Image 1: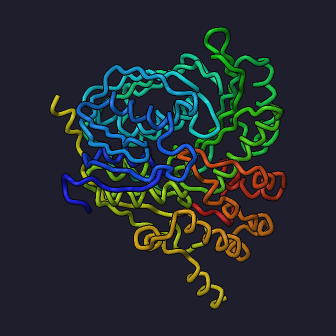
Image 2: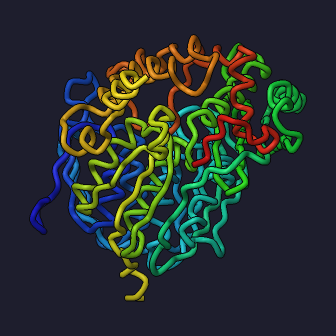
Image 3: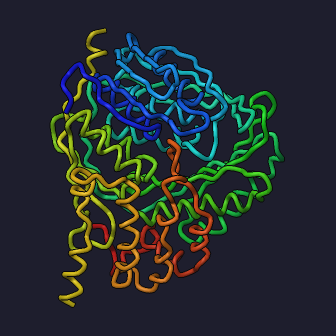
Length: 365
Length: 108
């Protein structure tokens, strides 16, 4: 644990997002160096610069220093101010890249977030606007962030042209609730959104049919919605994607999606999304792989009580996140097999003592 | 059977130690795990699926490839191909409400 005042030090461009988030939440400065030093185009990428600018916009008093070569960055966090903010995301990454860290910060802002982001709404690297709306936001509700939490997809924008627009509204809380989520339940329904922009609307129906051909064997409660945006709302480039989510009797959500690629039939995209969903379901737990970090973070920030959550195996990102959380907050998780009688299942029980984090920004308002 | 039990105990990963007390990279921790997974399933609960779980999903995800700060895991087309198999599809049925509460129910 570093002394207060001295910055925590990390190397490399990987995991930059969650380190910046942890820095802002904990109030500890962070220094990241050796950002692509060997690359022929060294230093921060445009999307990383853009993320830093966005963080600057949603906070007050944050100091960001980027070295001359761009291979090192120092962030001295200010308070999270929130409020109405508009940001143009570069077309090198989707809106999800920028929105995911914001979602981790938003409940602790001074005033409720009304964030407008423009850019690509769906790509194959980060969560699409659809998944954030249908899966990520319900995860926040587990922690008592609920009233007024909303994501509106005003326009869709596919890669590479973009042109999409979303609006994210998030209430502020004083403190997040302690999570106790250990029963994954059984899957009771599957929902999905097939969207198509600037291509034949028939494509979304073809994706739905292909996905149903696999899923129909499991349960009858499957509703796949065909979402076609037209005209100015459909962005600058053609594209389509299928987002799927499975909801269990206890509210556990597993999700997957696949995005159109040149030369691949819609049916194959749908099969990839469907099989990825089955893969998530097989991994078990109450939280899927894409949301492990978010849930673990909120558990750390919970009230001073023991929070518990059952998950599948951690991803590499999650493992690094757990290590970084300990650097910033001094909190480590207890991780034991969820089912001691059956150590092969791979499911793990994560528990930690909440740090009792309170939203000081809000009480100062 | 007792022997199998102890060896399984040994194989069960100490996640806390690996994450907090070792300097292994996250990828290395998981790569070690994929071997454990495949061997485990031979005596695991899943009955007939062993052959398919031996596809080592994590093995090819090299350090150089995992170079980006991305949320969605890279989709491995080859890995997803295993879902063409009917038995594997059937094995998931227990996760659904329609799957009944058969003997290998594992909601503990």
